[in-house]
Length: 457
Image (cartoon, rainbow, N blue to C red; front, side, top):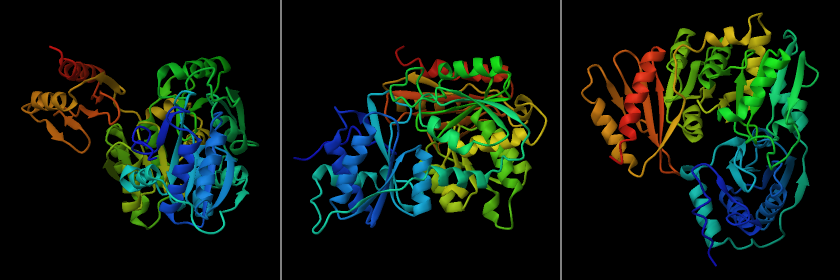
């Protein structure tokens, strides 16, 4: 009987409620289809701390092996550790995680050898269709299973990319959110001039303390309080699978991911050689205008993309860019197979902080120039109609420019701008606004929201 996988195959991964939408039978079918699709002699897998992750990964491995393909089990790890495994071993990979989603969810992130992304436009649709139809077992012997511990090699690789051994002593509060940062941080940041104060390092897929999504302000409150109470130099929060990081300064104030993007970009540009690609920095279109400004000021070439890791990685592959950042706190490095790694981004911030005497608030201020609204979601049953209404409202504004790279972006004559995009999965419109000052940002935010939310009138 054919499987209906439409509800769980998303734009970039597989994700659903266990066992109602995603169970071991489905995982096995996807494993067989993945093995057939990538055509490799072996596949590497890893999994997070959720109770369902081990059985799902083993079932997936059975599907892979049914095609005569070997499985290398990297075991417990973060998503960026799986990307490391894929790049280091030059094998296609599968990570079993639902990132920051609640405990009842799980999912699968897939990549080709070298951590090359697989999304709906780059193979995930074909894998879904093959799994839905069913992939017969291959003739001959099934593939083998072997175990490869990679945590130490992952940690060593990151430490060679960013050397923290010479930084001034720092007190660092780290909130792992009961996710995979609790597993990887001790390996990566051990025996350095860092006093690590751990929060919620116990691996627990039920997330008993707070959701493992640091972009939601409620989920970093504990971290903010602890940083201030400890007199710490910095706070770092990781999401559930530790591929994103969020930074808090010594006052307990959040540091914008756009500022982190600019800071890391400057550090990468400082290492640039003769290769023109060394000066290319990718940023998505909801990053602050400060990012391309700062990149240019340091001799770099900023390239603007749509929101979403497939677009960032695609542009990095096309241009050979050294680094890419998203306002969602995903950071991508050419030296890390163009994959995203929150750990490496956090290490860059620690290095920048530890190489000077200034507090993080002063350091970050150099990279944060304009007030921003943050992402504001509005429910809409007529997303395209609301987008059209917003565009019509601003079309005749003197000096305004409009583009449609991703949703609708409008820039006003004074430099204030906003982007509004429709969600791919929910009846939501997502608004981001930035102004030349707080007053202009607030006025533009309220003006735009009044149109977006006038749907029922």
